[in-house]
Length: 114
Length: 113
Image (tube, rainbow over all chains, first blue to last red; front, side):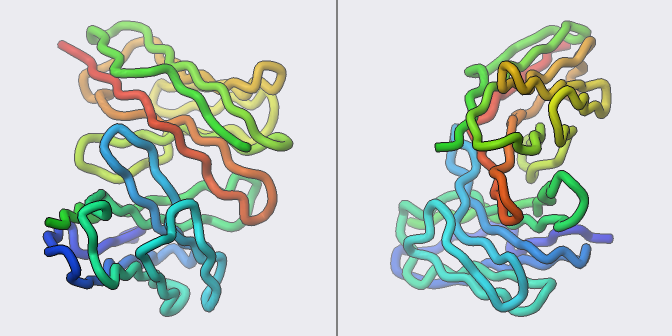
């Protein structure tokens, strides 16, 4: 199994450009998440999706939109990129059974906005 | 609100030294607790977990015990290796079926040969 995959690995945008970060998981998980990680910081939740067709805002949703395309895929869109969105973005999915509900993370997308 | 506090890094140790990374949390109820590890340039990997009081999670020589009375989940390893150099995150999970993870800044560990 590939687990959680993300594309692209690296991206440079100019201010005002748009782009979509792709995420897919092959573990049949219900819940999926988008986080950002800034230097010296932990992860901050942008948006999450508890199931296909539903999405909810996290801690830092401004400037982003998401789409839960199907059970496997959860994309993050920046409509008009800003330098403050320079960050590393991680997608995760969650095993919604058992008693712990751990999340599994992708390798990340490193985004620079100039 | 829910939060987590880890010891400030960076932590620098010599190979084969004993490691402790302290972690305390505040959360409603009795959350599941995780330690995640992030190696340079990679995503986060689950290192170990505990789901109820007095549980001990262990993996790759690392251990942590869920202490309800002190709301702590300290990470220990008896003999670290250079390959353990990474950032370690203590992560409580909020209560409820949707309970999200609570991240702090993490603790960077550097192990020297």
